[in-house]
Structure formats: C-alpha cells, structure tokens
Length: 226
Ligand code: ADP
Ligand code: MG
Image (cartoon, rainbow, N blue to C red; front, side, top):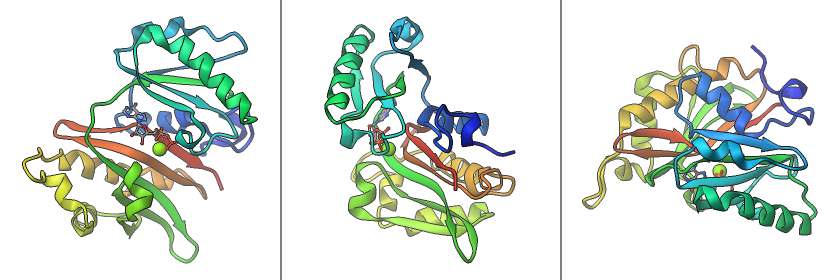
C-alpha cells in the first residue's frame, strides 16, 4: 500500500505528524490518544475526552523541528489548551509560520527516549535505525543500523551495541524498560512484513519513542515520502 503524498495531507508530498502516527497505530505501535483541530476558528471542545496533562503541538508544512519553532507545549491542563493554542499561533505568525492545525494529545510518562527509524541506503535499500532519541539523539549520535528485514536477534544486537544500552536495563537503581516492547516495535518497523515494505521510497522516523517499565509509546513520528 502506498502511503502519504497528496491524498493524505492538504499539501502534496507533506505527511503530518498525526498521519505518520496513524500508520504506527495501524501497525500496532502505541501512540498517545489525541485529537486534531483545524480550521480558521478552531473548536477545542473535542479535547474533553483526553486525560491530563496534555501536549499541544502545531503542525504545518513549515514545521519540521517543532520544538525549535516553539510549536510544542507540554504539561497543559485541558482548560489551558485553547489559550495556549492562540498564543502559539501568534508566536508562530511572528516567525512567518501559519500552522495548518493543532494536535492535542495525552502526555506520556517520562522514560528512556529512543529513536526508531527507517532510512534508505542508496546501495543496500531500507535500513532500520535505532538509538537514544529525543534530546539525546543529536548530541550523542548513539545509533545502530541493520538491513531490513531484521530478525529479533539483529534487533537485540542493535540495542546491545548502543553506548547507552545500560539505560534500558536500569541504570544506577533506575527501573529497566520493557525491552520486549522495544524489540516488538523495532520488528514492526524493520522485520519481515514490516512498515519498511510499505513505505516505497520514503523514510520514516519515530523520535522519540518513550520506553518505560510498562511498555513503549511513540510520541513523535515523521514520514518523508521520497
Ligand atoms: P519535535 O518536532 O521538536 O521533535 P516532538 O513531537 O518530538 O517535537 O516533541 C518534542 C519533545 O517533547 C519530545 O522529544 C518529547 O520529549 C516531548 N513530547 C512530545 N510529545 C509528547 C507526549 N505526547 N508525551 C510526552 N512527551 C512528549
Ligand atoms: Mg521529535
């Protein structure tokens, strides 16, 4: 199945975060419960069914690294969302960015932030990537790669090869994360029949995936059609 492109977003070739997350959800990867709000006079009533705290994110064609543009607000109560969105829209307008809409989603509990992605090697084709994610991803560049389709052994080897792998198993008294859930997520992306087979020539990144002792949740996702 082809994904992305002009059918799924108002801007041809651009796939927004909630659309990339829908792909993950369909594939069985946990993502936060959320609602998408668009339109010139957005109605935030739909957020009522979410559990606090929530996260507010703007999306739009000019918004790639959302936090760098001030397009992510964490730790909001539901009653604060509409005001926060108004202020976010103004701050973005001052930077020349007009968001297409907002994603309001439940805030996941803190844990170890990982990156899980599918990249494309010009010679070898689809490659699964994992490593420490979130704020650590760029600072530490602690990642591992394997050609798709990967096996569970490949995935466990990848995780074991990370310099930060001790974080997964409980470091200095911290609880270890559910490594089985991390392995399952990586197999969903890069294993036999995984997402890599459906992405045609595009690339995919979930960053971060938050891993805790009770599972994983992908709180950001991006799909880049080729
Ligand atoms: P960016 O486009 O800047 O990568 P993200 O969606 O990754 O934006 O959000 C930035 C950071 O905010 C994430 O790295 C994560 O630490 C935190 N975050 C985002 N969404 C959630 C969420 N639903 N629950 C918990 N933390 C979140
Ligand atoms: Mg991110």
